[in-house]
Length: 358
Ligand code: ATP
View 1 (cartoon, rainbow, N blue to C red):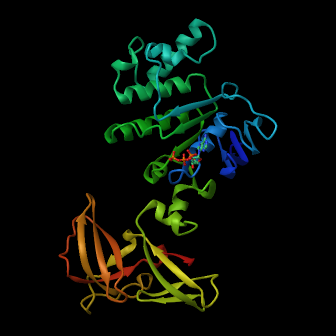
View 2 (cartoon, protein in one colour):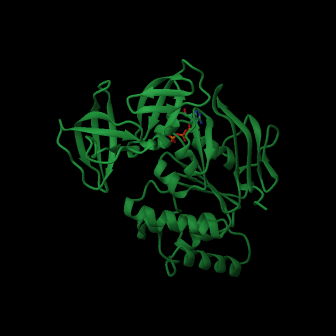
View 3 (cartoon, protein in one colour):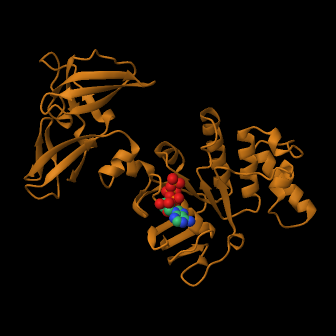
């Protein structure tokens, strides 16, 4: 049987000075599950988190943890009564308290119980022996781990995290991110993580809720959101995209790359066919020297290299296409840096295209 949701956010809305900022947002998060709120700046991610924390008041809907209502239209429990942990980007440890005192700060119980929980957490975040150090003696990564231990100490059922890793340098970040996740999963905590970085969401989330203009426009596992975006903007949020256009005729659209399926679109609909640069293939066998392209790859179309850049583990090549002079991008694994002006033939993975009405 699937886990009952730990956190249940039901049709929550919030407005500031008459302006709707969060609109009809619903989320469920199971114990040990990570839900990422992802979206552009100003789309309402942080406000959603603050509503769950009790820092803002909702105007409609309800928020429940393990079936207990924390907030609805007539109830607003204050943050300290919610049993919800918080970690923000500026995780602000208390500078005048030692590491152990910081972790013990929100703990109830006897001295011995508190000391045991602090010792357990410092061991788990790999800071054994740091008890008496002052926060300013620690690196950014170590401080972040103390903040995590402090937030986890009272065993919150729900942890809310707002861009918690963005202050850390890249090398440190991946390790701390993975360790944090492991610890939260071990503790069975339901996590809501706010980020504007798709890579972070893909790496950390069990579920992604993609937000735009106060609403959740798509929700699902990272794989599904990436491979079946609900619209052009959702596709573009995760990578560069290429867009070609066409008109539907008999559930098909003719393009320079061959025919694309356009099921559900009536004849005459103008559609955009969207594909990511990694799904454009360079057809080196063009000219009768090799096998015909597979049916999946459709018809090759010719373009002229505009520029090529090495990106690390792949190369990004931009082409101006003969058929309408538009620029398309292709990524090629490894080093492939053709000279500008070189003509090449391209095909598109038709099973990886998304077709939307314009
Ligand atoms: P970012 O990634 O930039 O932090 P966000 O998606 O977290 O963005 P929010 O911080 O939730 O966005 O803000 C959503 C909108 O609500 C913004 O337009 C913001 O200016 C507005 N807003 C947030 N808090 C308040 C407030 N207390 N009073 C008035 N407007 C607010």
